[in-house]
Image (cartoon, rainbow, N blue to C red; front, side, top):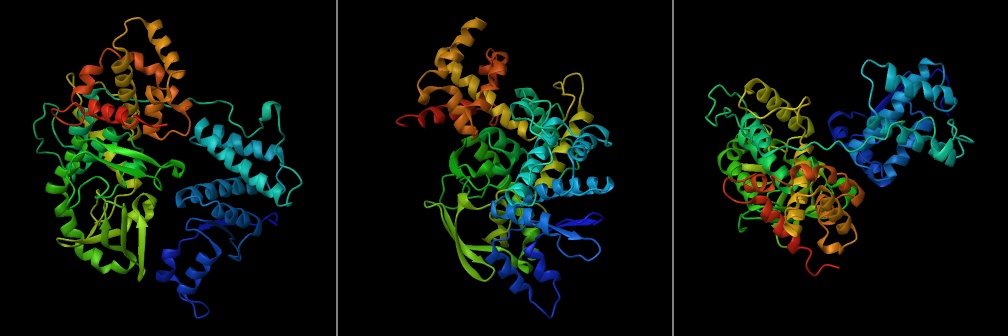
Length: 494
C-alpha cells in the first residue's frame, strides 16, 4: 500500500543500461537482464521508488507490471508512468495519495492540468490522461485494493475525469505551392525563386526533401516512413529501384498491418539522397559503429522476396520478418557496406543510425523558421501554426480522396449533387468506395475517421488537376499513379 507522506520517484526499466552501469558483486548485469526477460518485464516499464529508501512502492509498481504485460511499446509505457507519477505528486501536495484520494482530489488534479498550471493542456491531451487514470483505478478495483473508484459515474457513463469537450480531428493540409515551399525552401535550402541560397547552413537537405516526399507520397504516419529499411523502399542490390510496396505492422498504430505503396517519384527522391548525401554520412560514422558492433543487430543476409533478414544480435543468430521489426530494433540494425558497418534504415543521422523523433522535430522546426524568414509577397501564405509532418498525411488523404471521387463521377458543379454522391458511396460496393479505399490506405481503425475529410473535399474539387500534376516528381502525375494502384488493388478483393 502507498503510505501517506511517502515521496515517490519515477524510474523506468532500461535493460541496455545495465551492462554499462550495474556494478555489483551480488548479481551480474547478464543475470538481471535474463530475469527481466523471464518475467516479461519490458523496457520502459515504470518503476515507482520511495525517495528515502529507494525501495519499490508496491501498488503503483504493480500497475507498471500490469502495463508491461499489455505489450505496450516503450514510449507508451513511459508516458503512462509519467501520468500516474504526476497524479501522485499533486496528491502529495494535498496530503493525500493514490489510495486514499477522494473525488475532490482527483478533480483538483484535473483543474490543475487543464486550468491552473502555467501552460494548461488541451482536451485531447487530457483525454489521454483521463483514460490512463481511469484504467489505473479500474486496476486497483479489480485487484481488490480499492472497493470502488474514487470518481463517481455520472449520466451516460461520464465522470469527473472525462473531457468536457470532444475535439474533432485537426485536419491541416497543404496546397501544392505550400508544399513546394516547405520542401524546397524550408528543408532544401533554396531561395523562394528556386535559386541556390549560398547562405544556407542546414545539414543534409536531400534527406529532408526525401523524407517529405516519402511522407506525402505514401500517406504514412511519421513512425512508419521515418523507420523504413532500404530493402522495403526498393533501394537494395538486385531491386529495380522503381515504385515499391511493403507491409508495415510493428511500426504502425496499434500494430495493425497494411500495405504501403511508394510511388516511383518518391523512390527516386530517396535514391537521389542515397547517391549524393547518404554515403558521406555513412563513411564518417562507420568507425564509431564498428566500436558499438556488439550492441547492434548486424545483418548478414537479406531475403527480399521473403521479407526477412538474418543476423547477429547480442552474440546470438537471429532472424526477423521486416514488417515485425519495431522502431527500436530498426534503429540498431546495420549491415556491412562499402565503408564498413552502416545502418539498414533509409534515413541516417550524424551518428550513423536512424534519426529519432527529436531529430525529425528539429529538422521541421528549423525548416519552419527558414520559411518564415524567407517569406515575401510572392511566397505562399503561411498558417498561424507551424507545419507538422502529419500534415503531409492529411494532404495525401485529401488529394487521393478528391481524385478518386472525381475520377469516378467527373466534375459535379452542384454542391447538393456532390453530397448525394458521398451518400451513395457509403451504400455502394465496398471495393469502389473512395472513402473506404483511402481508409484502408491510411490504416484507420474505423472508416468513421476518414469521413471527417469529406468536409474538405469540396474545397479541392476544382483544383485537383493542377494539384495532382506534379507533387513529388517534376513531370509524373504521382497521385494519378497512386490512385491507379489503389483501384487496381481492389479488383478481385472480397
